[in-house]
Length: 154
Image 1: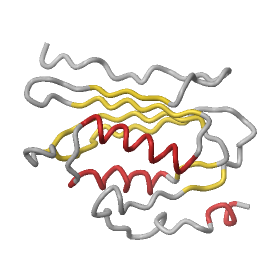
Image 2 (image 1 turned 90 degrees about the horizontal axis):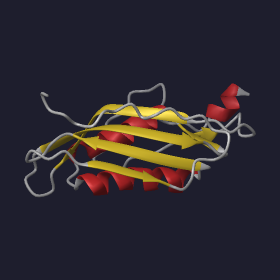
Image 3 (image 1 turned 30 degrees about the horizontal axis):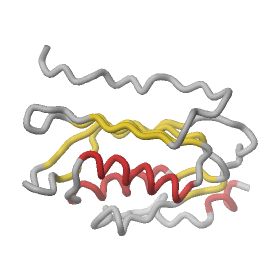
Image 4 (image 1 turned 90 degrees about the vertical axis):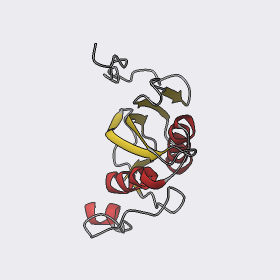
């Protein structure tokens, strides 16, 4: 059964280059073998980077993506490459965060998804961006995202 579920994956297990942009990044998915169970999955990207669209300077964030899968699971290497494709992509914090969430929702059709984008300060002001598809489904245990508010050195 395992080989059948993973037979369509093209990036896992091979040498794969970082995509040129988020638009060209190829997300991959596999059927959820536990689709009859409601459970949460968390991806954490503590070293996410993108570029300021005005200055071209790098921006850094700690992303936390929680989702309750439906029929599909995102393949984690393809997600890593998709997130890495933002490294040379110019967009504001809000656009990056919401674009990631919407692409995952459109691609996976999860029962529920939320993203927390905890951006490090730009111009002395940290910007945090939060979005979710709706209320958390009943019966799901989901811990806090665990990222404290930015306090600088203090």
